[in-house]
Amino acid sequence: MSKRWYQENKRDPWRRDAKSKGYRARSAYKLKQIQEKFGILRKGDAVLDIGCHPGGWIQVAIEEVGESGAVIGVDLLATSPIEGATILVGDITEEATIEEIVDRLGNRKLNAVISDISPRLTGRYDTDQAISLELSTMALDVAAELLSPGGCFVTKVFQGAGIEGLIDAAKLRFSAVGRYSPTASRTASSETYLICQRMLPRPKKQGTAMEHLQSHLASIGIVVDEDDEESLETKVGFRRIQKRE
Image 1 (cartoon, rainbow, N blue to C red):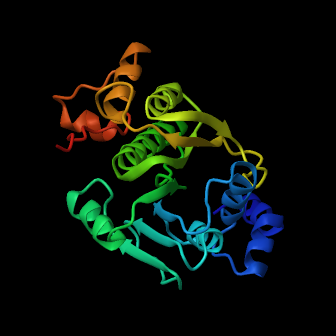
Image 2 (image 1 turned 30 degrees about the vertical axis):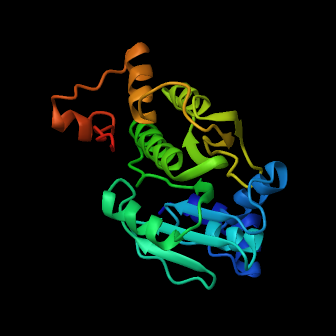
């Protein structure tokens, strides 16, 4: 950890405010600013937070949906319990995790899927951005599967090659799609948030969001060889996602 990073982090007003208000992460203010501008969460909503660790977005979601709402968080990392939320440890790409989420929802349908998911950073921007794009596209596929019509989806993504493919995939599934950068994001950060509202009853085009993204990547000269498993894992961070029946 560099001395410069430590000093900037210590001076960060959002971090100080989050700590004083009891939020687990400064990122809570990013969701609060998204909520203030777009009103994506309503009282009584059922919300899924993908990549919820350490829990800052869950805390904000609980505040917004109230006691009549339901908040479920899922992450590969164990997250300390938060009163008013169900927190699962699991891989969102696995069938068993999706089934557990559906089971925990009971008769309810999801109104919102939110995701501040981020890759384990390598320090190589192209690699980190590609993996982030993949994670966000995975989250979009989950949202498209589990959301009720009219629901909304929010995810973080790093600016860079391929982002337009994700946006186009989102536009096939939602009637309103746009980008938003909260002021709570670090000044030097290249992150932005994709805000997708009013999910359509059915996509405008067949295929998964991941398939649409990979088609876009191929069109701009970024090709993933689906027969080469090693390149799928190391070249750009994309891997093949089996379409669920």
